[in-house]
Length: 53
Image (tube, rainbow, N blue to C red):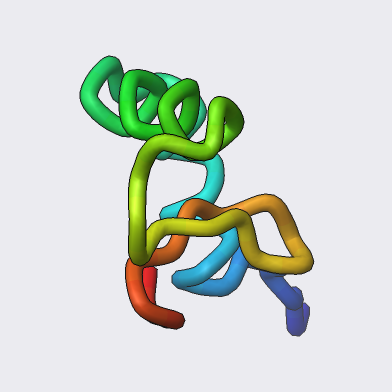
């Protein structure tokens, strides 16, 4: 019997882990307040620094 497993992409896994990381949440709060240069939220919600996760 063949089976297929669906696994999230690496980017999706990183995005999910960012949600529970205290340091990332602190940076995210500063990003939302406009106080951190270089960081932004990607289209999928992942926190990025200079275009990289």
